[in-house]
Length: 188
Image (cartoon, rainbow, N blue to C red; front, side, top):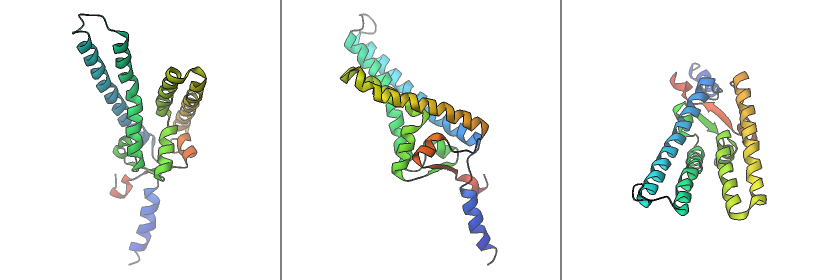
């Protein structure tokens, strides 16, 4: 009976161990591959759209058709981050799950974490472009500044990750979340 009591605190302590460089790299690679897949699908849709609208290239592309094709390509990062945010609200992105990681947070904080991730800068830039086209240059400055700040913070997080791989990323600190390993109880 005394052997089972120390095991519970040990398992709890091991379950919150910080992720390694490899864990974070695997998570980023899987999530980045998903972005590439989203872009590939958008590219195929855009090319198919243009081929269909130009009789397989027999006529020139009209401006409206070019805008539709460009919109398909530009919307892929936004769709990707929305997909990641939905997954993150359940505890981890697909890449984090594959790496054996989880985010300790509430769903609201997990969404804030996704909005502040370095790759979310793509979405903020997309939003800035959308606002620029619809409302003009001055309102577009806000999402553009947010995108720039997120990317600068992402570079700082990357530098911190290289020096101290177990330190929390800046987006985790901002959101009040913590990335933890989940595979330790299984001996992985």
